[in-house]
Image 1 (cartoon, rainbow over the protein chains, first blue to last red):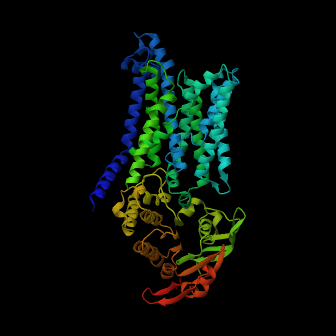
Image 2: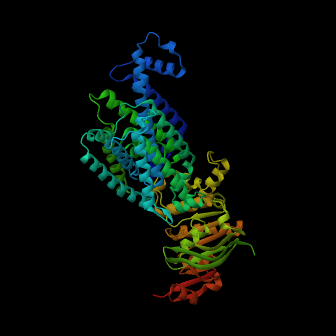
Image 3: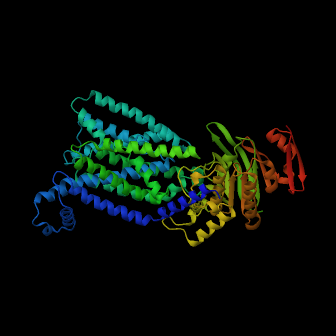
Amino acid sequence: MPLTSIKVQEKSGFKNRLQKAIGIQILLLSMTLCGLIVISACMGYIQLSFVDVAKIIVAKIFGQTSMLEGMDKIFSVVVIEVRLPRILTAAVVGGGLAVSGAVFQGILLNPLADPYTLGVSAGAALGASLAFFFNIVLFDQIGLGACSIPVFAFIGAVGTLFFVIYLSSSRGGFSSNNLILSGIIVAAILSAGISFLKHVADEQVSIIIFWLMGSFASRTWVDVFMTSSFLCLGFLIIIFYARDLNLMSLGSRTASSMGVDTGKLTLILLVTASLITAICVSVSGIIGFVGLLVPHMVRFLTGPDNRKLIPVSMLAGSILLLCADTVTRAILPSEIPIGVLTALIGGPFFCYIFRKRQAAVTDN
Amino acid sequence: MNMTFEIEKLLFFYEDRRVIDDLTIDIETGKFYGIIGPNGCGKTTLIDLITKHKNPVSGNITYKGKDLSLYSKKELSMEIALVPQNFYINFPFTVEEIVMMGRYPYIPRFSVPSPEDYRIVYDIMKQTGIYKFKDRFITELSSGERQRIAFARALAQDTPILILDEATSNLDVNYSLNLLNIAAQRVSKEKKTVIAVLQDINLAAIYCDYLLFIKQGSIAAHGNTDEILNQNTLQSVFNVDTKVYFEPYSDSMQVVFKK
């Protein structure tokens, strides 16, 4: 046996053992995430100690206010009302973007697909921009005025998704190539629409631009509950169909012969992943590369089996975006939009991985 | 006679082109069927229709005496296994994982494979000669190797019907014979039914009990291989001149072509 093929097998064997340790991976990542949530809650304008923050969180969860005696009241307010909502929103959005990226990649059979490929994010962005432009405030009477931007973003995302599916569907269902192509066309039109709004808006132009670049500043518990409930629901649906998604990677004819209703599965998973994307974009603006990059990196760790890939991607996405948000919030001298940060770090990193893969292909 | 498929007056359109045009045929249980026909004659569409991947515009397909449309996808996945024409996977699953997917119809959604599933998968990988690269990634393999894995996956599904859609098109002659031998064994020993779309008429002549010649979406000729495989059939279906004779070495009819 030639030496190279022995090497390949050894490498594969090692990778296999790594991929089988799925329980440990999930446990370690969950612990890391919890630790990071506490650590990042320590960081900021007022520096707090790890123990104090842990005390505040435990006291809040178990209602033990006696634990907080002797501590400045403002600390508790800073952690509970200011930092935690933002931190948790960042973590949930990171997880959501990563999960929907993994699903889009699985359904479109393209490791380079992500929520943006279908134009869903552009739809959400246009919806939100319209709301800013016309200064529309809904639900103000019932005290939910803050929800009007998410609602518009959401309508834009879902509307775009159905239009893209409608464009690309034929009697035989929809092919992944057609979906990507329609997504790109629609996204181009919507981006032009956003540019037009920016051109004609005078006072609101800075709000629109800042929102489009993505930010977690001034998130509230409402955002946390809204995003996390959608993510939980979506995650349950996706994990239920994760095994069928594996079969989809064998091609739709094979998947169909193995008992998968390919048209129905594609529709359910695309709608679910788009809803998760929409809710994420609506609270945070456009944050690129998380949906693309995280499942891509996690695949090295877990292998392509979606039953492992999707939970691990969710945790890894949470950790990544939480770290990125903490860097811009607490470490950098002035806050830069998180979408800019993820694109600046994620983009080149992605180019590196992609180039390495291409080089490996030509070697064979 | 025990029938697996009874297909009656089947009709299917792409846009306004009749791909399957008034096709009627019965498929008997426990036989090796070969489907032969020129490119674009509707062979693959016929397979999509009998696996319920596509639904006919009109006509009836009966499977084991019951209308095919009354079976759920899940039920059919334990009845019919398909080896598709082009088998390309974009994600780095290992060979073992792919073959194990053949067992999915028998494994509940959130369960791990049983020792019995592993035994079946390992046996099949050894039979098909892919055991030695069970830990390799499917993305690293050649198209011929991938095709053997697709075949092993379909065998792992352990169904009474095995459909091969040009499953030997990327294989060298050694592996083509190996694959068809395994399929033929399942027919003779386990009374399974094999329906194989084949381009190589001589391989079809060696293995198939019956041949179906398809031309322009309907059956041009069908019958016992030894009777139906002759100069006139090939002339009318493919429009080529041939000599067909009995070859004792392969114990079958064989065809030679003229330049």
